[in-house]
Length: 295
Image (cartoon, rainbow, N blue to C red; front, side, top):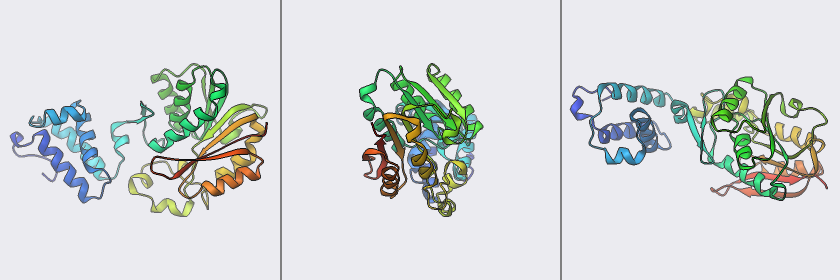
């Protein structure tokens, strides 16, 4: 079944095609071969993973096999499963994704959690600005968790903003949420002030982009990955500009890459930010650096 293209349809049950796809993905060193195989087949058949197990003896039709073959072909080429499915779950909600935006990562949920925690004293009202919003997953999630806040998401990519607006409409987050095109803080009026600035900016050092996993390097937008020569270009800009866009005591929360937390924390301290905190993700990595503007 190298296609996969069976000669005998009776042979190709759910259990067998899953076994074939899993083994195929394992040979190609995919990080989660069984999960990938199940998610892709579930999409073709309209079944969840439990239903796949319960119906493991069911024989696939030619049309179903053809659809699954195409999904396997795309995954073999390295395309992320989220792009093949056209969606990715983030904070318990389904977000549309494609090659215009980064695939939302579970660790980025910590950025939302830190933002919610550090602004809980103002849970009834406030203004938040999400920079480098991409798919809008952070801005939309915060807006849905804090429905009385005004939330703005910005991105230099108009194509990304098209998808972010689509996600906002599909998830019912249109009220109080605005998306603007522009380079970081240049997208908002100079006199605007916020209770919260948050961002998951590009943070991969330029020289390391080519060494990323193929499903990231070859498919996700380089614009959203490349953080300059040392990966800290955006943090330097944000630390220098943030305070003038924060109200006294306002919060700045930033996702950072592996090993970058100390350097980012130093940038914020030098910029006069106070009450610095570093939060670790579930893997134990220092993932979010946050601080307050002086009161």
